[in-house]
Length: 138
Image (cartoon, rainbow, N blue to C red; front, side):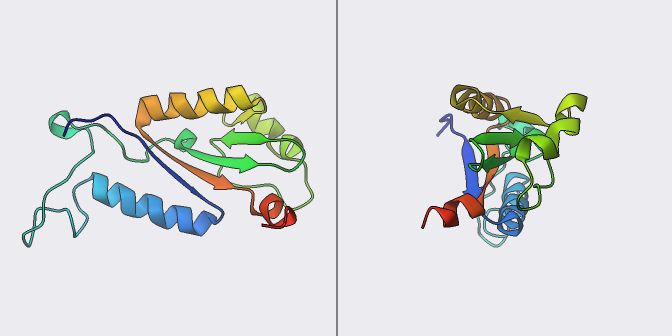
């Protein structure tokens, strides 16, 4: 249909997000069993080939962590989360200084970071801080 869209996966479980991202990448490559063009299925690709949009998860900044404890933080590019009780800012400080991780504190900056990521890659995953969610009584 040639419509512009993006996909954001958001969850509390790192393992669930890893599984979803792996499945999504399989889909985007045209290798998902339900959309592979085999056994009567349609072939669907979002891998940049033949004019399709590249939507695969290929860059570390497509994966983010959202923390609510100690002030809202959106962290992109990090593979690990701080241990319970450790400050988000302190945990990522060295990686931020090296330019490997970005720490967005302002809600507008967080919003812009998400939009810029989606503009460039059209897909993103965000792992939410489960501890803050459960402390709030949800």
